[in-house]
Image 1: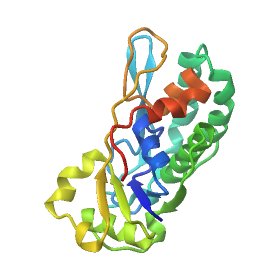
Image 2: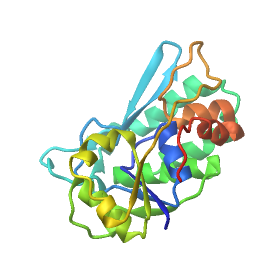
Image 3: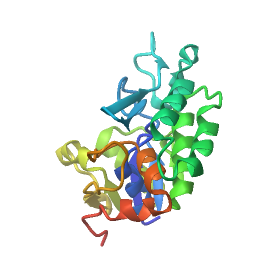
Image 4: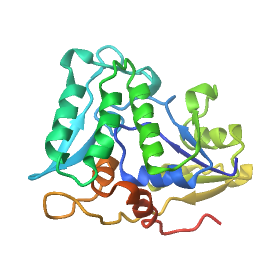
Length: 235
């Protein structure tokens, strides 16, 4: 593999997440790290007429403080995913491309997933298919690695044969504290993405929403819009 990107599997991710996937030869779901409650791993934003609406997947966390992301179970007792679907339908039913995609997303959210990670990954792969982006997918939990933070990221790149690591910009601070990539022959590039504007419902444009907002509003043009946000070359 040449270019590797690594991210935790998040719920209904934003546009920049899919640009990382689109630019990588191998995309690794970082599911072997500790789960952070109330993080993007279990929630994301959509848009309503009054602005931001947060959709959160409840999980079973009592007595499981140290659990890994790949172990986190959805709390099904609250039937929240059905409510998410109703909310999405209510606010996006008038979007230009809603009818083209809603049934497919509804099918996934209506399944009886036990693990949050399985739900997130299935959603992400569905979005990949709709956008038309391809990358080899690997779970870090399948690699049996023991490193921490930047060391773990470097180990993952080595395990999948990566020569370039395309890192999320938010990881720069902790990577630079102890950067192991250069000494291991791996080129490090930070993802530089400027959020593009596109047609939305409800007046003023709002960035950093779930990619479903883009897909329902722009449909087949969505991947080109995502790619327009790139600000650096991978050379």
